[in-house]
Amino acid sequence: MLLKKLQQKTIQLKVVLAMCFLFFFSSIISAQEIIKDTVVQKPVEVSIEKKKIDGIIATVGDYIVLDSDIDKGFVEITAQGGSVNDITRCQMLGKLLEDKLYAHQAIQDSIIVSDAEVRSLMDDRLSYMLRQAGGDINKIVEFYKKGSVEEFKTYFADILKEQKLSAEMQKKIVDAVEITPEEVRNFFKTIPKEELPTFGAEMEVAQIVVEPKVSKEDEQKVIDRLNGIRKDVLEGSSFATKAVLYSQDPGSSSSGGFYKMTRKTPFVKEFKDVAFSLGEGEISEPFKTTFGFHIIMVDKIKGQEVELRHILISPTVSENALKEAKERITNIRNKIESKEVSFADAARTDSDEKETKANGGVLINPNTQDTRFELTKMDPTLYSQVSNLKDNEVSQPLLNTDDKGKKTYKLITVTNRIDSHTADYAQDYTKIKELALKEKQFTTIGKWFDTKIKDTYIKIIGEYRDCNFTNNWLKK
Image (cartoon, rainbow, N blue to C red; front, side, top):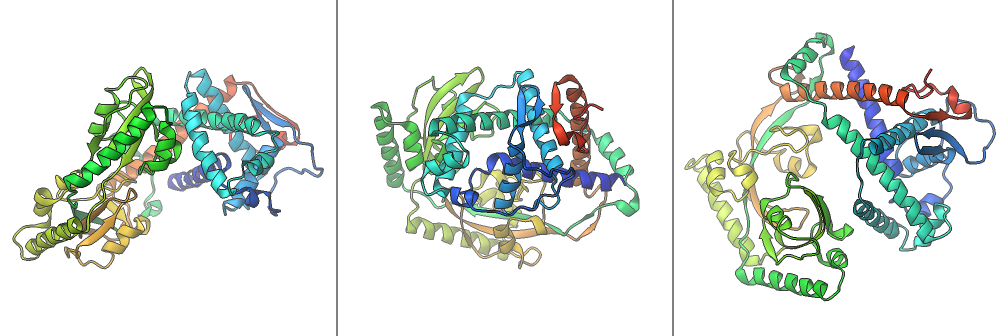
């Protein structure tokens, strides 16, 4: 029963997260798609026979919920291809109330969301919306029923700030939850044998990566280009515009190269060293990391936090460099095949991938942080590369292009296979710990809501008072 409850809670959480993402961050729908007539079947728990004039239906602290907010939630989920068949108006309202309480409490806890963060979010969302709307911002303004572009931007900035506050408050609660090995053990003991979960087939994978060598001449071309951009900015050009036009970093180029970071942020050392050596308004000289060459401009320094913009450009890899890399990795494969060296030892001595070479090339699953990859959840590209390999078979050299356009050659092998099986405490400790932690997080969030609802002004109006909410919003 305990596991079933946890599974139900997990499903509820997925629905909640999906609703949150779609409702508040799905402004990527084109105006044409939004405005078209859409028939939405909305299950209801309460009878709403008359079409009401839009108005306030709930208040949480300093925040309000409009009746139209619920309708927009259904429309946007449907427009994104999601199903609303199992979501009632009461459930949608319950989710909105949760977001408002998170945001309200974030302010009470002095959580700060800077104007720069909001501008970055705005630039990102608006850029996508404009592309989907054919570049016509007036269509977006019309959909949101605002009188001008400025009125829309002010309204949308408030939405983004509220949702960022909500997300930061949720993160603060969840991040504070820790679990001990003893709690994990006790959690596992409470699951009846007949209710133990079954884990799907998994495999462990290792790889050797060879990077083509970039010539000094090609590197200098990139440095000269970045110096030219730097000179333009110093003479008055916009760094953000230059980043949108020229940066090859997919994670920041659309937002003008913006990042916010501390010394604990997981950026490469070279990047952090330069970022924290600059003063406000300073622009770095071009410098090199494993990703390519960068220049950084610092916008603001707030204590231990830096808000910056950067431009990344990677040198072009020549055909000769690619050919040499393929020859090198082919020689490595030949040595492994002839038993001169093991795959693990070859990875330690010859791989250019710093993250895996010390481990003998073993890959870490980014979703679970362990070495196992469940076949049904494996990245499609990785699965296609390993699915036909036999145990300890080494692949032919594979040309790989990452999301930044960087080309490398790699060898890949399957080092271990784990068949589908019923959960075992010793074998599946990492997964069981994750389940136990989720259960504790759910419990912690539930207690948080119980406490904060009692201490916060909350008012729900009209027929929505008949809703059967998960949380005690009506304070009965």
